[in-house]
Image 1 (cartoon, helix red, strand yellow):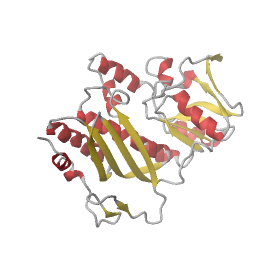
Image 2 (image 1 turned 135 degrees about the vertical axis):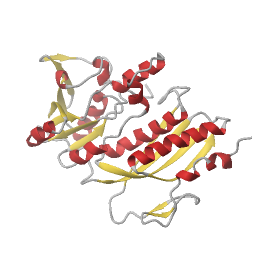
Image 3 (image 1 turned 120 degrees about the horizontal axis):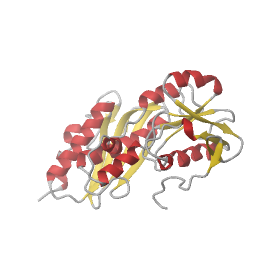
Image 4 (image 1 turned 90 degrees about the horizontal axis):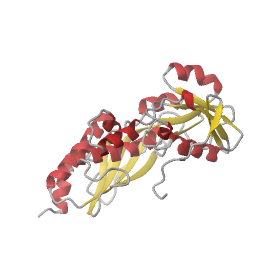
Length: 296
């Protein structure tokens, strides 16, 4: 019979031992203790639930990687790099091999981003993964509430690849887009550059419209966005589906040339309108969908 102890043994090889410079107490106690060393410690938490954030019958390695990656993306949006994480896992699988494969997915992303697993918890129930991530800022932390009128609006990459990947997975078509859905890549290499120029930033998890609206609302500004400047995969619904985990940020006009030369897409500008307007061929258009909302 499968037991909690046996499941925990699947993850023991991933745990970081204590007595390192940054971890005073690691897994085994009721909580971990991290030595912050007088630096700001950036923290975020993300929950992924079956049939909401990943499809039923997803592979355990894919679930583990995706759940951790989307949590890490929040650190990138704050202009921070990752260092530690902990994970809460709820599942009702009866084969120990499922948990071993889930651990393989964690190990893959741990190696890719050089992050340390410092603890977690498991229990029985419908599949839900809760990931806590911790990191340190590259420079000053980036916020949503500090966009300025006259700033330009940028994104880091193409939108809609994850949307297409989920469609292909559901249709049982083998395409390269499927990897974009299950293996999103937090944009830390861009975050380091952005942190030296941006006035505000957010990751595109709920769709460009919805997430840019968070910046505008928090900063008490508006924006004009030019659709022909946005790299999209299929159609305008790529702007509202979400799950891209690209970064959307604002920066002053004098940074535009440098950012464009380094691969960022300038897609619009911040104004004082208190709303977001989309334009295509100089004509204002209305997006029927506004973004992803798990409660809608």
